[in-house]
Length: 202
Image (cartoon, rainbow, N blue to C red; front, top):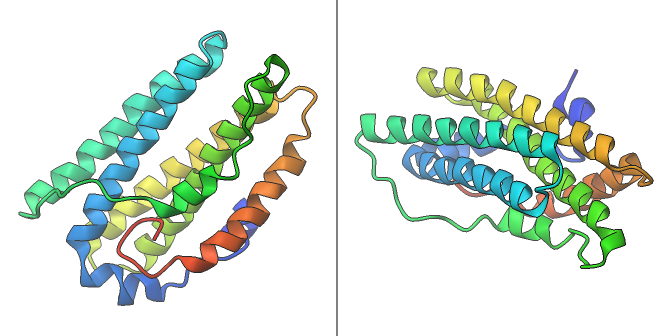
């Protein structure tokens, strides 16, 4: 089964992204990846802050924070071991564009809708990250990184499933599958501008 079928992503990543872009600057992709893991932990914390009255979600996100920060440390360990420099945070234009699609509103009736949309945003980022990690694991010539990204690919798929599951569980009265398709369609448009830089989502 292909990633396009698994996640219904509209546009698969071209493997030439690995050969032509990533392998020309491994140091840069590792720095960007480390920050992606840190931002994933921050997103989980944000979900806790926004939904303190949802015990299961708080518990799941607390566990996720630990896992994402462990991934951050593992990437940082590779950077140090290879004598690379851990640079400043990079902008994630892909995620910033996705965030424009979030439903917003402060009304009581919209609180659940906002939570579900935030969960679907997280699911989308995990789905694309998983797909990118798969492409990296299959095409990067560096054996250590190939094994590392294969392991993380499996982890990201689990996170994607978690976020989709929580959205469906708490999205009572919301057509979650319809909204997820809208997210897929939106991502399918913006991703056409990416796949050209040494970043996980670039």
